Image 1 (cartoon, rainbow, N blue to C red):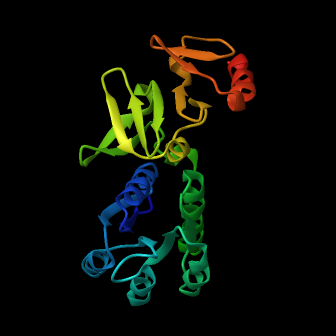
Image 2: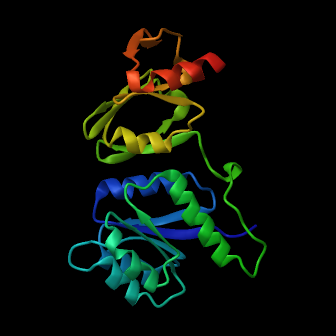
Length: 238
């Protein structure tokens, strides 16, 4: 059995770190060593612990990600993460494995990991990241200053409130700073349905529906016109 890839996340934005943390948790071959808020903290970890991979934001205060990358002398691989396309050339000049543009979708994250495996396993038996290696039954979200695990089976529906979302479960409603677009990329498409710009529902929790509404747990949620055709088509096939 191949050892896990030990990684750190380096980003000054808490939400960006949370998203990558949840992505890493879903891939069994990767182990998160630490989530760092600045380059100096990351530099200390890299020089005192075994780190195989760095998810590295470029545009950070004081010491940039590019400066940190230039200072890494070990055989530590780098995947850059940034909201700015103009840094791509600089990133690849530093022999980065990949360059992820924010907001990062889980599928794009997996592509970068697969590229890493292809690079690091050229002398060994190739490793692939597949559905059997991905934990797909939960996500982590930040609420009350901690990361909370939410099982997909517990989610009834998700409600958008601008830059926040409410995740409704039978026992509680969890509010987290996240966009509904980003949370949608973390959910298995076979189990969840976007019915409106403000709502995602769990398919298994639907009790009835019309052309205008979906009902679940005594709650009626509207189906928007832009989603109606695809939603009704999918529900008819169930």
